[in-house]
Figure 1 (tube, rainbow, N blue to C red):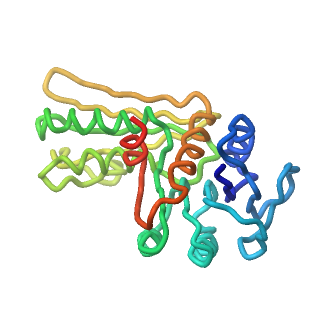
Figure 2 (figure 1 turned 30 degrees about the horizontal axis):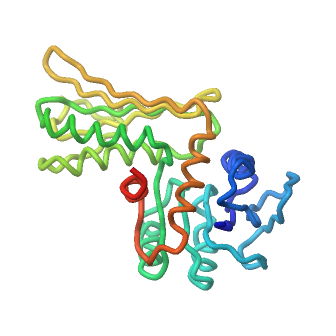
Length: 253
């Protein structure tokens, strides 16, 4: 049995994970952390990590970048691995995560979906085949309550494509302020926010007289919950280091 702490337990994903864990026999949610305490839960909820008294094997984090410092401090003091699903971190915060990974196991992913990670692998394959003959554009759509843009998943996709190219790609987020022909090194990233869209990502490879599109639609947040819980079960007991979905997939598939 893997016991975990849910950081951001009263947020959208925190609540979905709290429901999903009830269907599992291999994991248990022992307590939560959230600055908002206006919801009733069947587990203790604290406003900060310093108040926690329960023992846990892993932390699952679906919160806000502002919660990172307190979470890492607790994790390092208690030698507790972290599954970090929050996005929108600054470069300084990402560096802090990397430093923490020298002492504890950290699993970080901008998207916990198996399908998205397969989309990334397919996009990398397409980029290897097409090279610079095809222009790459990424379009991501999310609900109107999402704060960060572009999504962490869009950046994951762009990073995956960039990793197999040798032309020093650059990310373009705004064409409005620049009036010039498209550079072949560009990876365009566009964000759409509206309604209750759970999440949709499309990668477009546009060449001369043909276009290849690879699309993933998340139709329920439960798929992210399952991925996060699986990551927690995977991470428990792992040695210090950085882990991601590719590590989990290699072990399970």
